[in-house]
Length: 282
Image 1 (cartoon, one colour):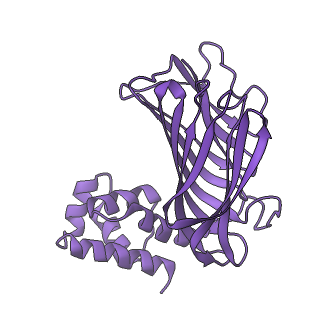
Image 2 (cartoon, helix red, strand yellow):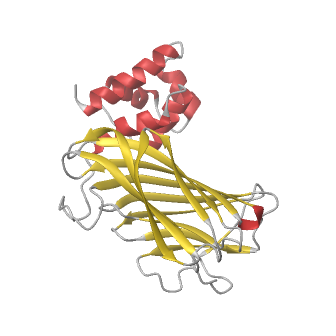
């Protein structure tokens, strides 16, 4: 079965489970698409953009992560460097990376869920190294703790503590995938990282691209009612110079915190080593 046929079969299964609504009914429910296009999706003769697959899957109450993995397999997305593997970075290409941080206690506590849709860039990829740090100048001053936990489709292997300084710790954590991936195969997994910074408030959250590059990255922060910042801004880049410094008034880097105390920053087409983050002042 081809990747296109696998995706169509999964959608038809969801359609059947939902009472077999017609293509016309599905198109009317999701909006902005003809019933012909929906019919072609279900037959496997057309693979539309992910946004439409997600809408149809949502209407049919399907699992988004499973559908995303099936859809990714139809795209055959090339690596940014022409399929050349760089041994300085983890042997995966990030098709999509979603980081969600929950910040509370005026920044003394942060829980971060990181979802990764990946493609292996060599055979036998069975793990991914998560680098988690709590160190002065980044998130706190004083003794802080960081813990990495499995969340979806993975387990925790070897954990190597790294002492960065007298005031900051880090961990190199082997996250073991549910099954090994050969070159070109796709997978999905998620981790959860808990930070405690008792001595000083956190001032930003960010993610570094430690794989072979990333097609799409979304960083989002949900603040608790006691931890609403005065100002937020985003940063994207490779250099670490001034990335967390507050931009001047009117800068396009400034982000608006919604009435529900939520803010996000996205980026596309990132090389290895790039960083995406959100910073703030209290």
